[in-house]
Amino acid sequence: MTYDLFIGDRTFSSWSLRGWLMFVKFGLPVRVNLVGLYSGTMAQDLADLAPARLVPVLRDSDGVVIGDSLAMAETLAERHPEACLWPKGTAARAFARWMVAEMHSGFTELRGECPMQLQHQITNFVPSQAVLNDLARIEELWSLARNRFGANGPWLFGAYSLADVFYAPVTARIAGYDLPVSDLAKSYVTTTLADPEFRAWRTEGLKISYEPFPYHADKTTAPWPGPD
Image (tube, rainbow, N blue to C red; front, side):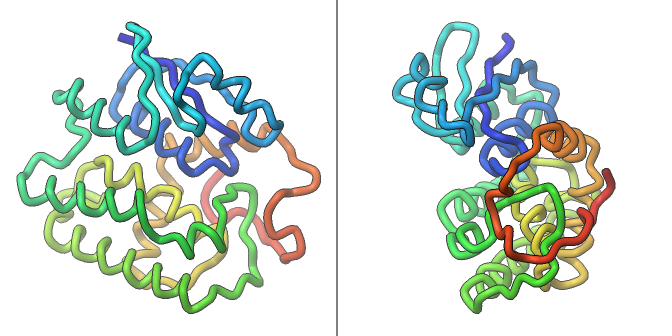
């Protein structure tokens, strides 16, 4: 079964990045379809996928449409147990689901003040206390996952899982806005930015240029802090 995945602009669409990673990181067959998120054609592009109105959204070979990244993740984990999208241990899997659910519904200040952008690093961004509070909670979750379950690898639960899928755009925000985090968090950010699939996503996104740049055009910038 090959899925059709509909995504928005790679440089900015954090939820699209999650949707794509849950396929490519686990070897699930997928065809990618780009939706006009920034060109204004998204409603038209999603017209045949009702009731979908946001990206990402997938359609399977039987024509079943599944929207919302968390619903997509659970569907793929159910259909492809051999791919081990969730951690294997019962306790680890429960905590990973908790972390993913909290990411899916929370951290609104970080998401609002620091929209994901993969073009460069913004060097003079001053985060609000609310953003710092979100970062503190994220660091708490990352630290617990790494200390309890992550000894056998570089990812949150050792091996790559859906938790890493859902927090990948958070690492991009930390890097893209030069946000203050601990050494443990910096190490995890570095791991994500160096990941070949993440780099491939960013490279593809940079093929499209934007004028004017949609976010924080008044800020000073430096080169992207991860490898190209």
